[in-house]
Length: 586
Image (tube, rainbow, N blue to C red):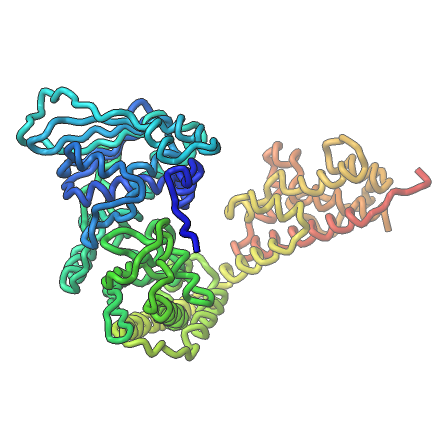
């Protein structure tokens, strides 16, 4: 039996590509690796910023590195870190290779010189596919450790920091390494605090995490001189109640979670949405990881964090999930999935019992909406609030049931008061025939001929109640379209369209008259002219004669009747003109 022995030549350069690029879902993840190293070095502050738009700098005030630690940090896949540290793969310094042309590390440890070393990322990528041993490639692309002169504000005794420079961000990375995405990534991925000025519940959450022994490793991080905080960013989106849950498997506490629930009966929007796994403050996976565990539709009305406490539950190298080498993982995932399904059941219960936002909308509409329509809307809402949905049995949600039920009681009281106001308004309007007629008129407009409807919709409410000289414009327009004529008067257009010439005057004068004025195809054409002449003849308007005295002397209710009848007659005329067909004899 022979024993296979591996030498340095057994590990080709392709292995480096697989590790530096293949372990991560996205290249922004190199920021997570560098921030982890900073936190493990006990940094109190980390600054991330651009220089000249193409060099990204990650600088911390942690312990820094002496020559020995720097050499160890450059070892590939080898790490001195323990369970107390966040990072553990021994690849962090190399994680920026796929993103830039050169990685420069400058570091200073107390009582030690300032050191610098660089990695030629361009050269490393060139050698990926060459038949060269990995160790030779790493040696070739890594420079020597140099000692640098101290800056004016540095001292050999006290100064400590590490600065990673990703120099020459590659053009194909510009879309990824932009200000917004970097800020969003840092805020949702690394252990930064809440902004308790905007999110006051953050103070209580931090207190609970401390009481439960959750290690969050919160660190002050700035991007482009702006402090990064983790979501959520607003209190008013949520009920003022903190849901907490311990996930216990086989008698062991695996994780502790805190959650907030939306009070607006709708899914939250990023960044104030999602439930995230955290370990030592670092995010594992995305919000979709939780959604997948629910095994059903989950409307994301909650925000929360599930902090892993049990060290045996390890994240994978990409930190997008956990390693499936632990008998606690499957039952833990099952328990989380059941809990998320309880959230969905609670969302259904809330939707059936809470309607605060909808009631506020109805209150705003009540002053302008027809009472009958308002009552229909109220009835539909009452039907929704009378649905009998069960609340989930999950004990951690019992407090939310009390809150939802209290809100529901208040909503039903508000809806009852609104219904009383609408009924009072309906009674008042019942004794107001003018208002009732106006409402009828507005309803008629909705079903009128399209050209008439369009004309009236751009007319003011006051204008609708007057005999305006442009009121017959829809008739004029459709006559021009149907005949192809450009004549600009209703009289001439109707004469040409329906072949009539004049209306003869009688011998003895009319028995009845209006305001001192006297006045099937041909008859229809005359009717069009008569309708125009009676109500909107521009010549009569210009003369200033008492042509419309018959109209102006009427009561408001009578005028409203006339306007409605005129509009109905105009609607009839338009529909008949539209149905008219070309005469083949002409």
